[in-house]
Amino acid sequence: MDKNDKDNEDDKRTKEKVSDFEKELEDIISDTSFDDKLEEMGLKKPSKEEFLQEELAEKDEEIAKLKTEIANRDKKVEELQTEVQQLKELAKSANRQRERLQEKFNQQSERKIQKFIKEHYLPTVDSLENALQYITGEQDIEGIKGILTNCYNELAAVGIVKIEAKGQKFDPEYHDALAVGSDKDKEDNTILSVQETGYKNENTGELVRPAKVIVNKHS
Image 1 (cartoon, one colour):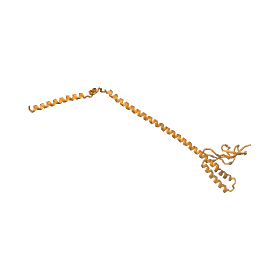
Image 2: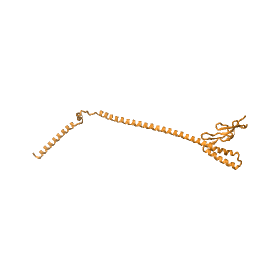
Image 3: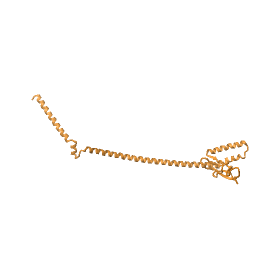
Image 4: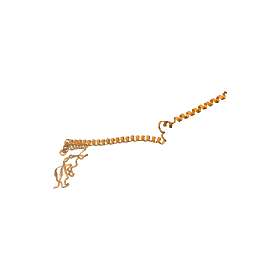
């Protein structure tokens, strides 16, 4: 056998091997295909619609979980908002209580101050006012008037002011009638003179001491 015949023989054998291999490969592919394997396992390949439905079911489940989480968060937010509102109400109540206590404290403090002024300060002022009726020296009079002015200013600094009386209509809320007089030139119930100066709290209108007065009465 010459060289060409030998080469031809080798080519033929190679082609047969390739053919055999291709056939064997096809058999392997056929035997290991997805559908055959599913059938061997007793399963059925899902259709496209079934596959999409399964995907949708999974998504629906995820959405349901998310909705539950959102609902829980909304509930928590609502609970927190309720707590915040309750805290605000408590704060308002505490502020109202503090304001009432402060007002009560202020009133008690003012009453204590007024009591001290009435019992210890005003008698001194009365004495100075009475002294003006008996002192004749101009220099002494001016000195006492200066002291009285300072006293009135100190009283005004804490809200205590004199009650207007002389020439005013008698007001039983602020005036205490010691006696009656008669002056035909003045209207009935007009205050003719003041025997003791009265004082009130100009901030609250509360009476500290009534003015003791003589009231005009026509017979």
